[in-house]
Length: 133
Length: 344
Image (cartoon, rainbow over all chains, first blue to last red; front, side, top):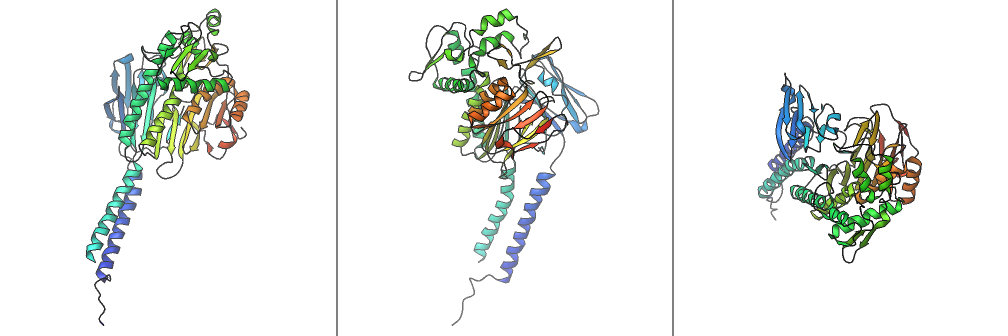
């Protein structure tokens, strides 16, 4: 009796499966390690006021300081090469001024009374997920 | 055979390219509410819907609980102090009830009727000042959680004495945190880290299945610098410290955590205390009460309570943790000013 061969994988099929699996493996490793881990990009400071992003400043490209002013409590934020901070605020608690310079991705300073937040966005490579204060 | 091979391989490719992305990037939302910043980090499907619902809920609770803006249930209750029962929202009743439990177990070290004293000092506002002993003594008689009465059946509450003021500031974030957790559960969120002004609610684990790493603020450094990390899964973490809202007068610093017994900022031998518990409703309130009690009494209080763990940072810069945190707390002090004493 003649055995039908149609359900058995042919050599070409095996090669095809292995090549695509290898390709999938390469994509997986590339995404997991290179794209995710080294996707640091530029250091962008994002200033949020009243729930809206009002300014984005690329801190890597600054040669001269940039001042961002917010009417509430006469807030002035100064952005310089690689760093940004609240420079002036007439808010009651001054917690924003005490935050000092932000320099790393994920660094954040907040002025609750004026509903203003400055955060350096980018790949969050901090070793903590959140802060209890 | 090719009929099976191709779809199979395409599926593999799609899965490989899709999975890594979904797991690694959370939805991150920041918003201002309850006099603080709310930062939500939510993974998985429904994250946007969940974030919207959480923010909406917190803002709703803020309106009920605020005493810094007109309207709301707590204002209504305060305005009617000494005049009998007032009908309130069931959520307000539930919050007051839970907050009162913390007052009872801490023997009044945490007391929501401290509102009149908080208003007198006005720490955290432009009008912050040191009141006279006379002014403080006049109001101390109004601070007593036993004067809060609840009629749960009819959703009513009352304050016994005219002038009494409830301030839920030390408890509202805990209640809101629990409400936020419920919303996450309802929407099938299994991995999220919610931060309500320093009160952290860790839901499940990180997407990589490891526990969440929660930094504990260094009480003598700028916000963001931590003295250690506590690893948690499905837990809430809250800290009370002398460094957050405070003001300086004649070289002396006055912080915002009032001792209900003295009507003055608590003379605690703690710089901060962090509470870790299963429920956010347990952490907020307990952290305030423990801070007021100070290290020795606070440590006994947490031990007796039994459902919470704590990290104590004393004014002489020593750090103690309770038994249950010894394995999950990692001391990491870049300032090199603090000393980690293991025994809590």
